[in-house]
Amino acid sequence: MTLSVFPRAGLAALTLVATSLAITSPAPVRASALFAAAEVDQQNFLMVAAPIGSKGEKSQLNIYEQLKPVRPCFEVGEGTPAPVNPLLATFDFTGICSRYIDANGYSVRVGGQDLASSYRLMVTRSGGDMLLLAFPTKAGAGPEMVVARTRGSAPGFLKLQLEPGWRLMRRQFGGRNLGHLYVYADSWPGTAATAAQPQPTTVEAAQPPTAAVPVKEAAPSSVQQPLAPPAVPPATKL
Image (cartoon, rainbow, N blue to C red; front, side, top):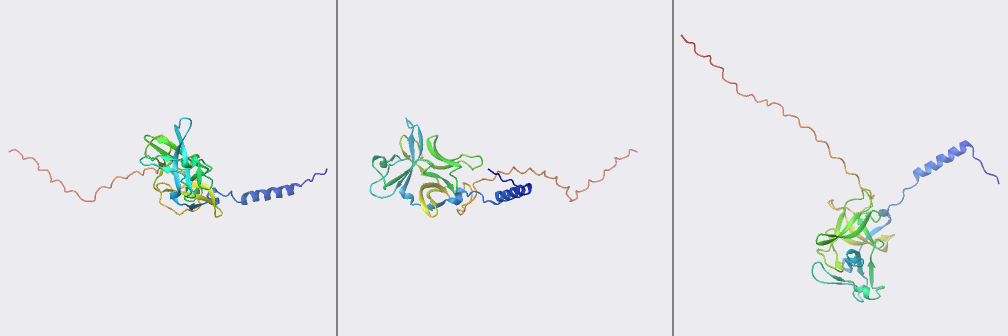
C-alpha cells in the first residue's frame, strides 16, 4: 500500500485553508432563531400545581389543554386557592385533551429568547403560598422570576394564576405548531416591553459602580465683607 506524502509547502497550504474555513464557518443557530412563538386561546388552558411524591409533599407544574368540547378535561372549584379536579385522568382523552407535565412539554421564553436550555420551571412553597418560579440553571442567564402563584396553600391539585405580563404561547418551527408550550413574557421584569426579536441568550455582566468623584471645596465668595471700625486709642491721663 502506497501512502501519499505531501511536501512541507503543501501541508502549510492545507493548514491555512483549514484555519480559514474554521474562522469563516457560520456559528451554530441559536434556539431563539430556530423556534417562533404563536398565540393560543388562553381559555383552553389551565396551569396546575400538581402534587407528587408518596405523600404529595411536593408539587410540579402541569398544564391541561381542552382540544375539543366533547367532555371537560378539568374542573376548577371556587375559592382561593382554587382546587382543580383533573378529569382527563378518568378517561381516554386522546384527541380531546392534551397534558404537559415536564420540560418536554413546556419551557420559558422572554421576547425572542428561547430559554429552554438555561431556565427551568419549578413549583415551590413560600410561606402560605405556592409559587411557580422560572429558575436560572446557568450562571449569568438572568434573574429568578415569579411566573405564577396559587394564592394560598392547600392539599391536592391547585390552580396556578399567572402574574401580570405572563401568558402561554405555542412553540412553532417553520410555521408549524409543535406540542410544546412557552410560559411567555414580552420582556424581562423591570424593562420596557420590546418586540419579540431574536436575541442572544447571554446577559451582559453588571458594570461595577462608578467611583465617587471628590467634591471640590467652594471658592471663597467674591462679595466683600464690611471692614471692622478702626480701634480707638485709650485716653491719656493728665
